[in-house]
Every structure is written in C-alpha cells, then in structure tokens.
Length: 338
Image 1 (tube, helix red, strand yellow):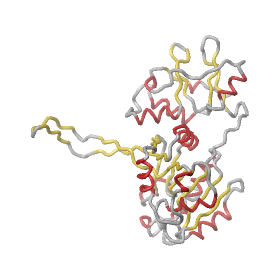
Image 2 (spheres, rainbow, N blue to C red):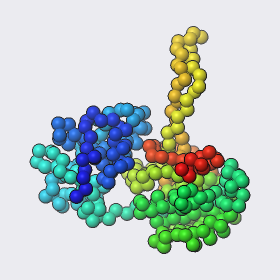
Image 3 (cartoon, rainbow, N blue to C red):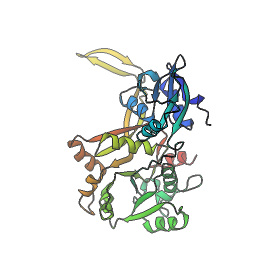
Image 4 (cartoon, one colour):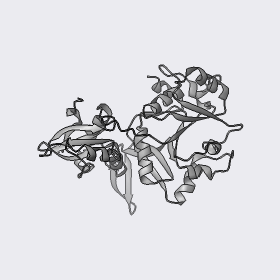
C-alpha cells in the first residue's frame, strides 16, 4: 500500500505546500485536516483557480480547498467506482471521517483515456538560435539525452497522449528522418507539411482531412514544460471552451523606485516593485469546430484565431505553476540543457 502521510496537510498550510504535495506524491490529491478529520481536498485545478484569483503561494490552503470533498467508506465499492468516473482520486474515510487511504482509477483498474490529439508546431527556422539552427532544425537541438521535440513527446506519453501530429517546413525531411529511426512504436506520429510558412496557426487547417472530432492540444515546438496535460484537457472539456490558452507567470523587477501621483501631487514612492504578469505559454487546446472553420492551407497566426474566439466570449485561461522554458534564445537553450 502506498504511504499517503505526505498527502496530508493541516488547514493552516500554505498553497506552496500543496503544490509540493502534488508534484512529489504518487496520488495527485492534497488532503486537508483539522483536528485529524478530513475537512477539504485540493487538486491541481484548485491551485490554478486560486492563482487566477490573484492568490499567491503564501495564501492558506483553506482559501482554495474544496470544503465539500467527495469521499467514501472502504466497503462502498460501487459508489467508489461511480465517483471515479468523474474524479481521478477519492479519499477513503472511516465512520469518524478519519483518513484511511486514497484510491485512484489505477487502483480500481478503471481506464481513463485522454481523447485528444496533439499538434506540435515544428516548422520555424529558429533564427534567434543561429548558428546552431543553420544545419539543425530547432526542434532537433539536443538537450541532455534527446532533442527538444523528443523530450516534449516523452512528457506527453506520460499522460497517455500518443496520437501526435507534427507540422514541418524548415528542414522538415531532417525531422521526419529522425523519427523514422528514434520513435517508440506505440506512438502514432503523422507529419503535416507546409509548402510555404503558414504562420503560427495555419497548419491547424492541415488537420481537416484527418476528420478531427476531439479537441487538439497545440504546442510550440520549442516549449519545454512539466505541465499536467491531463488536467489541462479536463479543464478545457469541463469548461466547454472553444480555446484554452495556457499562461505562465512572469515577474519583472523594476530597478528603480516608482512614483505614484494624484492631482499633480506625489502620494507614494514604491521602492523597486515586483510586477507580475500572465504570459502566453505557447500551449493551447482548440476545439475541432474552430479548426474546421479555418480556410485550408492559408497563413494565419494563433493570435488571430484567439481574437475571433474572444469575440464569442469562449476563451479560457489555464494558469501554469509548473516549470516552463521557451527555448527561443541561446540563454534559454543553455538553461533547458541543465
């Protein structure tokens, strides 16, 4: 039996403690106790909603936890199976609401499938990484053991995401040849070839002949992250969105004191303030209706597609607290190799 002691936090614990549990423990569920009784749970989604509501990692777990968590008794096998149709993990408690264990789909041998295809954008020239990319396409630049794009695919594989499209243009044959020799046979990879550069999203239209009926996760081919793709897909589906945009937090330290004025009078000086921003992380989930409405093989950028969807008020944000590196410079490439 897996030890769940590390999954348990007191009600006064911080959000940073909950993130640590979700990153390190086998079961991705935080159990919040007060006087040794289960009073709440925290999932990855609860963390992200808290971040969107301007909470930070110093806020208490009690501010984001689900105060009415689904739980079951050990003998309620049918009820547990029903709950696991919509929940990845269920806490098991005794008659006094003391925590006994956690059960998951794997424990009950209930298979959950991520019904989603993947599109990795790998057609760019990578000009900011010259001279490295003069002979090698950026997605094939080596990291510690494998090229960037192979590392991306390995991380997708851990979430049972095996149906992968790769859009190619610059040195596309080199990328195709690499995967003919270096790909796990259980992963299904198809290539979408751009005869001319189609912008940051034009290759989405090349999916149309493949009769896509489920959402597509779109990933820039130079983005390395530990994002929980399963949670991302679940969030998108639960929210009934047309597009979900992943957003990473980016801090800027202003190296000067900033001045606040009111009615031409100085009212405050803030010494070297830290500004926090949400930035586009280069990962999206796009519904098939958006893809099928694109003009086939026409250049278009993702920002244009998102702007149209915003007009329909159906674009969501998935905030990321995981590691994220955009390998768009020599400095970030060196960081990714460590």
